[in-house]
Amino acid sequence: MRKWMIQCCLLLQCLYAVASRPGEKVYTTANAHSHNDYEQEVPFYTAYQQGFGSIEADVFVKNGVLYVAHEQQYIKQGNTLEALYLQPLQRMIQNHDGKVYANSDQSLILLIDLKTAAEPTLDALIRVLNKYPQLRDHPHLKWIVSGNQPPLNKWSQYPGFIEFDGKKGWKYDQQQSGKISLVSCDIKRFTNWNGKGIIIQEEREPLQAWIDSVHQAGKEVRFYGAPDNVNTWQTLMNMGVDLIGTDKPVQLGAYLKNRDAAIYKVENNTHPVYPARFVNNDSLSGIKNVILLIGDGMGLAQVYAGLTANKGKLNLLQMINIGFSKTYSEDSYITDSAAGGTAMATGHKTNNRHISVDATGVNKLIPIPGIIASKNIKSALISVGDITDATPAAFYAHCKDRSEQDKIAKDFLQSPVNILIGSGIKHFNRKVDGKTLLEHMQQNGYEVATDTDHLASFSSDKFVLIDEAVGKSIQKGRGDILRKALVKSMESLSANKDGFFIMAEAAQIDYGGHANNMAYVTTEMLDFDKAIGAAMEFADKDGHTLVIVTADHETGGLSLLDGSIDKGELDGNFSTNDHTAIMVPVFAYGPGSLLFRGVYENTAIFDKILQAFQASK
Image 1 (cartoon, rainbow, N blue to C red):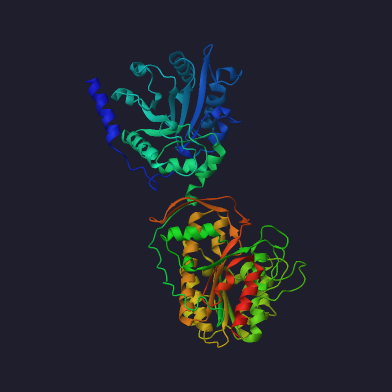
Image 2 (cartoon, helix red, strand yellow):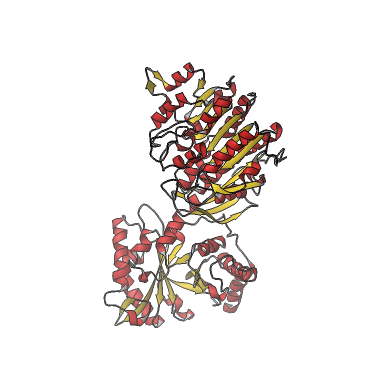
């Protein structure tokens, strides 16, 4: 009978597989295991403060006392299981009103690895736990014995609070299996993978099958001997491993705590891509209009995130004339949006925080709208952020510090720009000479509205729309305003026989990068691509419009660790919550797009735009 039960158990483990696959299991620090925790500078507390679900201690029995050490020769007086683990854990539970973790029912495994003879060491463990009944009997604490274990036929003699770490290849009957909730294995029994790239298929398939068989038997899985890096953690999670082991609890803790922000899964249908026709794409003349689309904070990783989320298609990536822009500012290796915007708007490097003034902060620099106005070329500025923020401000204002947003708003009264769309109403409701700036704008001939619903109703080519709804994120319900604002501006200015210039900014790709939030970045990138498609379609129909897509800088140091183009899923990691110095891509479409090939300073974008306009004369 016993033999039959063993065979049945093994058969179940071998024949069945569970669906523990990427996207189905939510990983938190409760899935983290602090391997050889006692070697941390601060044992127990380092992993505990990260909220780990499992902590490992190697123990040696000496004169009836359990000492914690990696090897017997390293035993130090005072480094006992009681001092390093039991007493601190009891204090935490007492401080948290009986809970292992404050305000949580999260459980904690104490994986006790017996290094000396199994039975006397286990007896010593039971004796010491009996001194701490609050720990011994706690419903959210597990005491799992690993390493040296007593013979299987003696397991039933041990109290219920003692569990055992299952081992690959061992045969357990039903009663013994009931004492196991975790099965551990040296990953090298399956693969010599070094943690880089992927595990080769002939090694991965049996590894996955074993993981699935353990899950089917109702047990959790832990590997030891695995590489200890982000790619390994990610790979093990993708395979459904329950406890991710590490000797770097702080790093793994930070990684797991950021899982929600690191993942994006497409929730709605992907957006269709405009079928590019490349009308006059290789022409260097006949350019009447220029549309500059700035994805604030958009680097190559953000672009590829959009491509992945839209399941392999982007309007942007149909463009074939591509270059790179060097973004450093006059006084910094890493630019901010003020200096980056100024470089593109005026053709001059300046200091960070400066808005269209030179590095002295005194001399004004004339931005594109001011230069082309003398040729009767009209302009529009659009942002799905505050229109007085650094990037759009560089195209109409002048000040030494980007924080002077009231002054920036006032500067618009001297700007020749025809259309202004964005958020930041508080800066325009401020009174100057007894009137708000919006009232001054009306007096200067602008149609003015503070509700996006009015966008379609503007009847002239001179209007201002300032509404806080424009500054919402896509995730918070902004809707399709960027594309709609661009389409309305193109339609309104297209009747001007001398042409137009439009700068439209996808401001919140940058916000998502600063927030280190993958979904925020990706949804903003997808929204930006819809506007890009609208610009490309207009360019093909018009035949005389150059479209340029670039960024002022990259934000977040984004890297893509995993993903699926078929599913529209992404898993990313940010190296900073600030800007980075890496070059950003420049894409161009339509007549004049050949000008934007190569690698050049961000100031060259200004030069090339003016060259494009000059080519039409």
